[in-house]
Image (cartoon, helix red, strand yellow):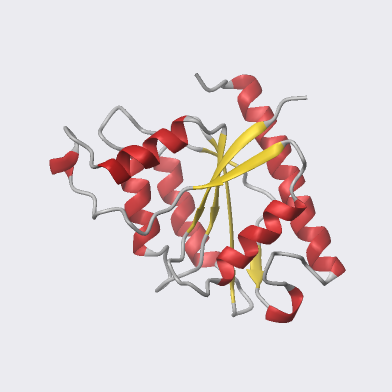
Length: 189
C-alpha cells in the first residue's frame, strides 16, 4: 500500500481558528495511508510579479513543500463572502511564476467551518474557481460546509458527535480515493 503525502492549508491566521481545530479532526479521522504536513502561510510577503525572478525564502519553502506533496487539502473560513487574503496570497505564490504552477494536476479537496449554518459555502465556491484556473484536480463531492459547534471538538481534534465524526471520516476516505484515482491517471513527477 502506498502512503500519500498531503500538504494542507489552514486559511485562517487566527490563534483560535476553528478551521485549525477542524484540521486536527480531519487528520485524526483520515485513512492511515495519508500523511499530513501543514504549509504555513502567515509569514509570506504579499505576492508581486517583481519576485518572479528571485523568490523569497518563505515562498521557496511553500513551493518546495508542494513539490514534495502528492495532494493538497484546503481548510478555510469565509471572509467577506470569499477566501481569506492570506490564503489567496499563498495560492498566488504557489501558482507563479508563469509556467511553474505548483497546483497543476494536483489532487485537491476543499472543506471549511464557520459558526454559521451554511459553513464556508461561498468561500469554497470562490476557492474552487481559483483552483480551477490553477488546474488542480478537485474532489467535487461530498461538499463539506461544516457548522462548527465547539462542544463537538476537543482541542486536540477528537470529535465527540458520532454523526459529525462519521461525515468527516467519510469525507477523508473519499479524499483518499480521489487522490489515488487522480494519481493513477496523472502521476506526480
